[in-house]
Structure formats: C-alpha cells, structure tokens
Amino acid sequence: SYFSGEIYQTLPEETRKFLVRSALFDELDTKVLAAFFRDTDPCDLLNRLEKRNLFIQKIVSHPQWPVFKYNNLFRDFLRADLLSSVDEDSLRALNRKAGQIFWDDKAHEKAVPFFMAACDYDQVAQIIRIRGAGDLIRGKADRLSEWISALPKDMVQDDPWLVFFATAARRITGGNRNIKAFSQALDTFETQKETRGMLLCTAYLIEASVFIRQPSQVILKWIGKGEKLLDRLKGQHRFTWARTLLWQQIGLGYIAGNGDIPKGISACRNAMLLARGIENRDLQLNASVILTLGF
Image (tube, rainbow, N blue to C red; front, side, top):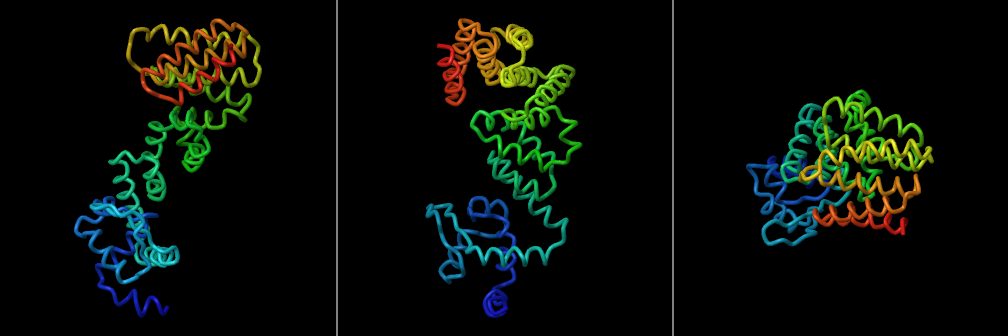
C-alpha cells in the first residue's frame, strides 16, 4: 500500500499504463517494446525510470536496443494491477499482440506463451508444425509435448501433424500405442497427399517397430514403404530434412531390426550425405551414431 500510494500512483498515467502492460514480458527488450508501444519511446522511458531506482535494472547495454528487467516483486505488483485493470478480452488482445510481434520476428519459442495466454491455439499449432521436427532431433521433445498437451484435445485428435508430434514426443516410452497413432497419422497424410508427413510418419514407424522388437517382416514392410517414397522423390530437391530422417531410420531398421548390416550402413551414408548438404549437424550426428552401430 505504501509503495502504491507514495511511489506508483505519483507517476504520470501514461507511464503507469506502460509499466502495467510491459509486465507481460519477462525481459524488457526495447526493440520488442517499440513494436508493442507505437506511441512511446521505451528506451528513453526505461532509462529515466532506472535512474530513479524504480526497481528496474539494465541487463544488456546495447547502444540502440538495451534490455531491462523488473525486480520480481515489482513485476508481480504490476501484473496484479494489469489483471485488475483490464477485462479478459483486452488481456487476450494484449497477449495476442505480443505473440504476433515474436511471430513476425520468427522467434516462435517466445511467441508460444503469449498465444497460449490469448487462447490463440491455431497459431500455437502452426508453430508446432514449423518447429516440431527440429525440436525432436534437438532433444526438446518434453517442451513439444507440453505445448501439445495444452491444446484442446479434439483439436489434437483432428490434426495429423499434432497427432504425429504428440506421438513422436513420447516415442521412447509409448510402446504399441505409438504404432497405432503413427499409422493413424500416416493414413490421413496419404489421404491428403501430404508427402512430408508421409516421410516422417514412415520414419518413426520404423523406429517404433525396432523399439518394441516387432518381427523382422513387419520392420521390412515399413522399410519397403519408406524406400518407395524415397524412390518417388529421387532427383528432386524437396523435403530434404524429412528424406534425411527417413534414410537414417531405414538404416536403424536394417541394422537393429533386420540384421542386414550392409544395407543399413548404405542408408546411413545416404542420410549423412543429405545432412551435409543442408548443413544440419544434428541429423548428421544421429545418422553417424547408427552408422557406428552398424560397423
């Protein structure tokens, strides 16, 4: 009460409005704030407030776009004021605006919490479709799973990409239900003639079959399906990332699931060649691990 009456309430109304709305952000990146507040100079305002020791600290001293941070208690105070001063629709609109700024800057990971807060689930799903495959390869499946679990269940069930990524995120522990879920997504991708989805689903069906030790003929069935897809795309410079992953999993299938070591090594070499072409070190590393297993 003392802080509010003696310090906060003495600030100009426009300054308080800025402080309250900027509390949406964990860090006060002035470049982001300049896009969020069109009629305010965030650098000038935050520099002045910092000099007044108003619980604001500069954490990055960039000559044009410095970054600041509120004291945690001060930020909690501002957020409480924000929640009490704007209605639910206005709060969602502010979060959607913040998410859109990060989306436009291709900072998808930072955009997700804002789109979630705005209940803009279509945008979250779009980000998952863009980032999902890369996150899986980089070992960020937990975060991917967390995003998908926050979406409405009927939305996930009706979208083959969300089904695919939700299943791939639990692929180490999912067991037999992974086969069912990947097969469901693959059927939808085939109906939609979605080549990238077909490539990725087939890749993870091979991996899932190896993980649960399905019979060799089952693994060979998925390998054969994958090889037909790759043969169809021979000579084309499309879906290189997905083709690389499929070659890698075909290598795994031959080596660990069928025992045809030479074919497995050859598939891994194809994967490494494609991974070098797109300069993807994560795929290159994973393929080299399976190649080493083959040797």
